[in-house]
Image (cartoon, rainbow over all chains, first blue to last red; front, side):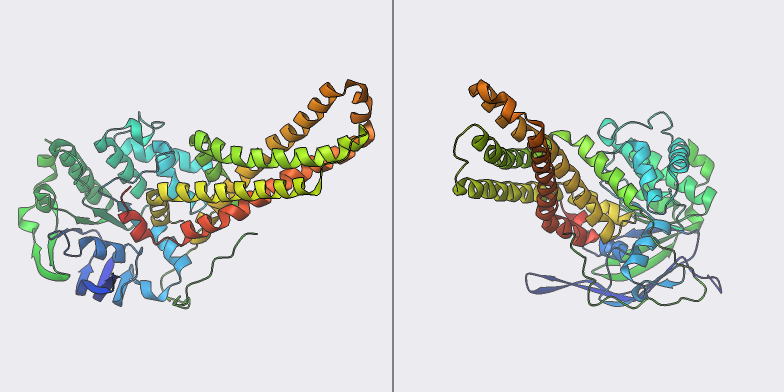
Length: 243
Length: 216
């Protein structure tokens, strides 16, 4: 924090949806500041606005009121083309349902975000292979998503999220569709990325394993921040995680 | 033919943020082409069915046009006017078929569209991908359909009226034949792209947040 620009700054963000003529206040004045390199967990019951908040931070939806700054850039002041660039370059997405492109192989999926930045084909193929090796799928480069298990698909998704070296990784319940052990391996992987690369990770979760390794936990309720808790004292050491 | 995407009216003006450099998405048309080609290659059966509807319509049209040349050569009256109209109606039917199958393809790929938009695809990129896909299918259906329509008509008349084979295959006719085949391919491509315009614009305008929420 301090003088340095925060990775993410959310200032009094409101979001109102119109569903069948009724107004739904999904977010009601959220304020958050997330420094670079932090691992932030967002908790809250379903309907509390986690995904809406993620969509705002990820630049795939615009707030009704309020401002969001990513790396100092005010999202409300840039046109949609620049927004697409920001999504591509600054943010890596990990979804609960993996959302890999079914017609592309693991390697092609990871290389896809690089095509939007004009990275030459040979380079992106090589980088995709490197990233897949980092997440432990070096031997699955040419498999399609349907030929991979849930945990492996999520690993591909993590490699894809890392493709353009984003400053921020947004993970919306990344372990929600995985069994305990697989989920644990994904948690370890995210923790390692945060430790090794200093990537800011923002993670919506119900998973207590993920809470334990986060720097802070934000509790959302009915579209407002109910509580922010520091977990520094409780962080498990990396060695314990390797077990 | 290619519809321009209208910028939303609420679009904020670009602003110079002093210390932060904002780049732009570079997704050249060749990459869009490659992406479309992969999509077709990996969903080949569906693509074939779409192309087949173009193929039939164009084959019928080229057959009628070819008959217009061949019948006078073998001392018969050329096909009556209403047959041209039938060909046009056949093309319209196949156009509606393409709209339908492209819309289905968009619905099927809601999540995919949402995802690539998250990963950095702009509206224009999505539009390009779908239009190129339609163009490729149109060309595929057009080439096969036009050749098949011309080939079938010529062969049938050569078998039924063997005494006229020389006249039918007279080299001077081939200029017209090729023109017809070319026209067939052109019309097939135009038709396919025009029919895909609405589904493509629809796909391009999808809000990524909503597209991702959609459960198939």
